[in-house]
Structures are given as structure tokens and as C-alpha cells.
Image 1: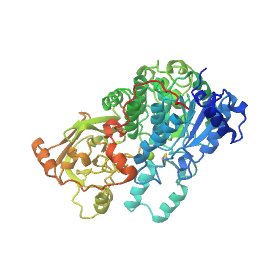
Image 2: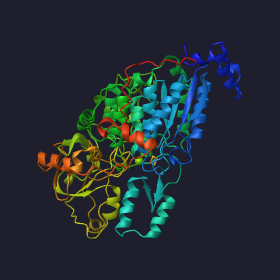
Image 3: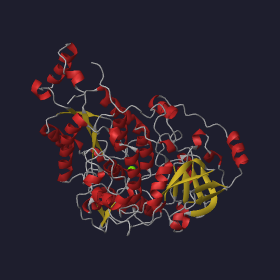
Image 4: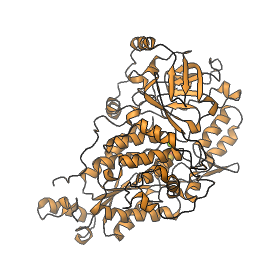
Length: 569
Ligand code: FES
Ligand code: MG
């Protein structure tokens, strides 16, 4: 077995001496290091990210597994991205974390790595980094938190909180009740409890074959989560010697499988952006059209909020990802390789008995195919997406006058104005909320229903933006419009009163304004005052690609070289 770390430690020259002495400085004996595969533990633990706050214990479990299998575990910190506290949006930093992980793996003497990720952006960032560095990697998702119970009901952290917020704004909930809700809302560490982005990305990591079978959905506080982390540590030691490497696992076949699974779980639209970025990092041709095609043939099989009624921990108890993949088998490429060392076909032959209240079958699904759809038209030449499974059926074909907000400040300032010229038929448009305009494409796409309509009982309207929305959100919400308005996309040309046509079955998003008029307005529209950011935000906005390409940086060219060369000492 030839190890990458041998380039650092095997030689008897001065650099070898220095590298060994550096580990001895931390109390390691020569026996503890010599010839043993070095397994990094990339830990996104942080006290600012409650979703990842249990990762110290999880890292200890990984360490146990690495030692049992004869490796040397070396834990290192990475930036941690937390949805709730990071502003303007954790998405602005996904690529920063991907670079952090990639360059740590590239520059240090790792033979393999175990990635500890949980909160929304952390799993995709780690996978992107691992794909680029192409050091063998196993993902250990952190697991969902214990759900809140409020007024006798178990809550999804996002989905249900949005509903209660609307009830408060509509005057149907008292401030006292809302304060009680705050106390109960998040009873412990772990990621959001429904099929939000974190749950979605954990499931996709397992479907892609980079997390061990059965590991994605185990709750954060469940002892089995720690046992799975231990197994991942042990597995990484084997991967260190013989692979497979990330780009042997993340292939077109596994990405198409992930697209199918995304549709079957009613997963987060954010995953679309992440899968596109991961594909690009892995040098795999994979586009919005692939995602639309997978969604168009895959029904909703998982009955978890926001598309269904249960929580993510129920999905685990119902059989989790292995049970789901078995049901989806006719739609999957089961020759895909996994870090477990077996193909999907091999590990799916282990029998499981799913709970049909949570995991349906292709014959008896929980929802029709087409739960996610890619839209195109003169308003979104490079595509837009909608989570049709979380939309109102009656609005999937809709034509209404635009009411345009020029940015999130404009939105916040006017949306609850009693004089707002809006009806339930209006199409709310938000622009300057894309990758460059946001910046970082914040989750502003689920524009709130104007208070005056809420009071009339309106609960959904068509909304269109170049933003994203939380995976826990719902509504008839068209997102990820590309190109975005800040780079001159047609969204910038929409004016109040213009008719907008949404036709989800026809995959169409149309602005009923003649093309030459759209061009004229775009040419005339005053250039946006450049915010002229400095530092990271300038780097980000100068290089970020549009949503249809995954919002990665243009300078992260798709990799073609399947190997990873050890650095000279
Ligand atoms: Fe971290 Fe939802 S806030 S997963
Ligand atoms: Mg989220």
C-alpha cells in the first residue's frame, strides 16, 4: 500500500525529520505514526452553529474507528456555516468553505478524510472540496435535532415556524404564545428536523455513495449516530490504501441517482444548486435538464414535511435511505460505486422493512412525478426552478400582473403597507437577490404574503425571484431565475403591471412584453450603483457563476485529472 503521507514522513532526510518531529511535539510516538494511514477529521464544529455543536463527540467516535483500523486520526477545524446566525446568508460562504476543505486536504499529509457536516451548506461545501482535492473521503452527516413540541404538536424547525410567523402577522397568534414558541422551538443540537436542505443533503450524500449506507438520517442524539461515525473512521483507513477516491464515486451515474432521490424525497431546491456545483467540481456533465428529467419521472415517495406530514427522524425509523433506494431501484443506476466498497446493487440487497406511512412505493407514492420542475422562457432564458410539490395546485398555471420589489429593503419597507396595490392574483417579483445581487443568493425567494391579503385569508401567491428559498419553505415560488437581474437578466426589465405567465406543466415562465421592448428597457435601465464590496465579497461577486451552473467560481475549472499528486516535501 503506497500512502500519500509517505511523501511527508517516510524519508530520513531533514524534511522527514521535521515532519515527524512536528507530530512528536503533540506527544505521538514513532510507532503511532510510522506506516499508518493518516485520516483527517474535517470538523465543522462551532458554538455558532447549533446544528453542528455536537461534532466534538462525533469526532471522538471517528477517532475511535480510525485507531481500531490501524490509522492515525488527525482532526482539523474548518469554517462552520450556520444558516441562522451568518449574514447576509451562509450561501455567500459555501465556496469559501469548499476552498478551505479542498486546500486543507491538498496541502496536508492526508491519506483519507472523514467529513463532519450538518447545517445546510456544510455538506455540499465539504463534498465540493473533497471532489476537487480528490483525497478519499467519507461523509458523516450530523443528524437531525430532536423536534420541538409546541401545543401538543411536533414541529419542523423551518416549515412550522414560517406558518406560526404568518399566524402572528395575521393577528391569529398572541405575542405571549409566540414567546412560548421561541422557548420550545429548538430543544437541542442537530440540524433542522424536516426535509430541509440539511436533511436533503445528508440523504443525497448517502445516495451519491459518499456516506455509509444507513448513516444519513440517524438522529443527532441517537447512539447509532456515534457508531456510524466510528464505522466511517474505520472505513476511511481502508479507503486510504485502496480508494475509491471522490471522483470515482461522484460520477454521472451517482449524480443522476441523486437527482432521482431528490425528487423522491421532495427535497430542498437548494440541493439543485449544490448538485450542479458538485458535478462541475467532479468534471461530470450534468445540468438543470438532467434534474428536470429525473424529477419528471420520479414520484414523491417520502411523506416528510414540507411536502408531507412526518419529520426526518420518522424517515430514519421507517427505514431511511436504504429503504427508499430499494423502492427507487428501477429508476437508479445501481452499478454506481460507493465508499462502502460495494455498488448500490450490492448493498441494496440487504432486506429492510419500510414503514409505509413514511416511505411509499412507486406504485403507491405520496405525490405525482414533477415535484421539482425547471422552467424556461423569456423571463428565465437560462432556467428557473419551482418546487411544485410545495406549491398550490391551482397556481401552477397562472397569469397575473407583476408587483416588483427592487431588493429586500424595498420588500421589507412596502410589503405590509395597507395601500400596497396588490391582489391575490398579483405576481410578486423580487430582484437583486441572486448570486451577485444578494450577494450570495439569499433565501429571500419565499416573499411574505402581504399582510392585507393574509388578513383576507390568502395563504399563497405566485412569487418570482433570482433568490433561493429555505428547503423548509413552501408556496408557489419560482426561484433561481438565471441570469439574475444584477447581471442584466430580463428580471431587471419587469415593471409593475406587466403580465407574467407561469405554466409549470409546460415548464414555462413568460413575461408578456415584446422582446424588443424587454431589450429596450434593459438597455435603458440605469446601471445599478455598484456596492463596490471589498475582500471576500468582491472576490465572490467577481467570480461567482449563475445558479444554473451551481454558483461555484468560474476559476474552479472542472477537474479532468482523476489523481491526486502528493506534494513534494
Ligand atoms: Fe442548520 Fe437548519 S439551521 S440545518
Ligand atoms: Mg435551511
